[in-house]
Image (cartoon, helix red, strand yellow):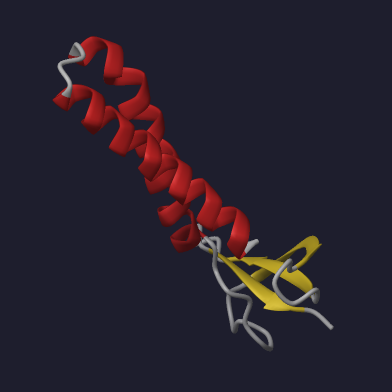
Amino acid sequence: MLVLRSILIAIGIAMLALAAWLAGCGAPAASLLGLIIFGAILSLGTLLERGAYKEPKEGHPGAGWIDTGERFFDPETGRKVAVFYQPHTGERTYVHNG
């Protein structure tokens, strides 16, 4: 997974570098817009995506948390994960389940 992330970030940065080089060569800005937008989305989106992923915790999250019944396997550890929901805040948390 880390290799794929690195490749996507590298492609995004290469697209941005190519846009900068073409701009330096006199290419019109309108023709570079696609390279700039997709390069930025690809590199920044891949970098920021990790911030959205919450590492599963051990044990029950505490009072007020409701088990949603959702289960999946954590791709990092291969362990089963349960999803809990806090109705007052809308927050979700992930707990290793076995």
